Amino acid sequence: MTDSLARRLTCIDCGAAHPLAYLLQCERCHGLLELTYDLDRLRRDGPAIFTGTGLWRYAPVLPIADPAHRVTLGEGGTPLLDCPRLARDLGVRRVLVKFDGSNPTGTVKDRSSATAVGAALQFGYRATSVVSSGNAGSSIAAYAARAGLRSLIFAYERASAPKLLHMAATTADLIIYKGVYDDLITLWDRLVEEKLFFDCGASRNAYKQEGKKTLAYEIAEQTAWVPPDVIVAPVAVGETFIAMLRGFREMREAGWIPRVPRMVAAQATRANAIARAFREGTAITPLKIGYTVAEGLAAGNPGKKGDWVLRLLREEKGLAGDAEDEEILDAQRRLARTEGVWAGPTGVATLAVLIRLLARRQLEPAQTICVIISETGLKTEAEVPSRVGAAFDYDSLRRLVTERLPAK
Image 1 (cartoon, rainbow, N blue to C red):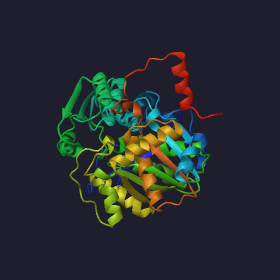
Image 2 (cartoon, one colour; image 1 turned 120 degrees about the vertical axis):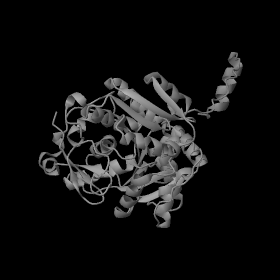
Image 3 (cartoon, rainbow, N blue to C red; image 1 turned 135 degrees about the vertical axis):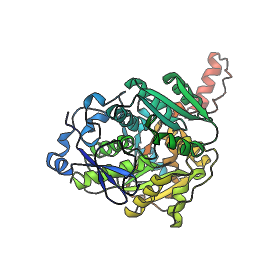
Image 4 (spheres, one colour; image 1 turned 90 degrees about the vertical axis):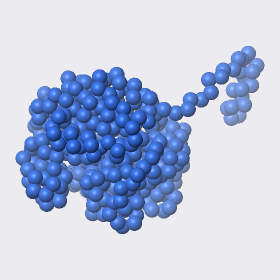
């Protein structure tokens, strides 16, 4: 397996270069940092540099140098599904679904948990922590357990029961917090500064974010290096969006793909600070938010990462949209009925936003559009169908079947 080609950390604001240490901000201007790789080597070696399967197939473009620190539960390599019935339903030439609900803990977060926990090992930490609305907590807890590290998981009090059960099973240190993500994250970030644990949050850690870049590399490989015209990615703080765009830019600069797809940032209307700022042409105004069914998108103050998303949207002529909870639940049913993909509300917000943007003619339907479906529906807490059973004899059973099925 080829070593990591990560060479330095670079400030996204002033451009200052820093060594590959555990740094969460630029030492010169306090801007966010991103990882920089040896793109000449990527250009020279081409995609043959990747070997193996799953997320760590892309180890050369990830920042974990020692193979012993590459923690895995079998994440990555998720399906890219061609969805012709959904495309017909939406009036779009071609729709692809990148279903990351098939990851080990049922969420895209497993990609960033692999690199976050790997980096915790790389930098000698014995404890990790995260503030979560559900998915990140269950994912970090699972990967920390896999690595033999302790995890302090701060979980949203309204997180779904399956997520809480998963967290309680994988960590002895599950702490439930009142309010929403924004209420706790500022206090928790102060503890990060004291280096009491390794930062597995979404706000600043470049090493954690990097795992989600593999989404871009997988999609490029799965489309024979001609990626879709449009990618619709979920945005809370912005990790998935930023990481994917960085991945596509790396591949374009290395000459592997002809262009970077147009990136669409998808939010829930009840937590739409970035989409609102993009629409209005302004800076981000933090929102005081309540509950949204898309729990993983419930961030009203995306901080510096949100500013970064907004900057990237404007640089790349991207698009941002949002959808109401009712639209998200409708998209959840629609995807399940047309293509058999059962995704959670957080995961399917991208489809709801796509439907709204198409209805408003903000996207060209004669394109190939890929939606990132970031979580399985099996982690959803929802009302179950009636459990009242019916008793049948042959005649009543046959009558029911003939009523339900169309005539031949």
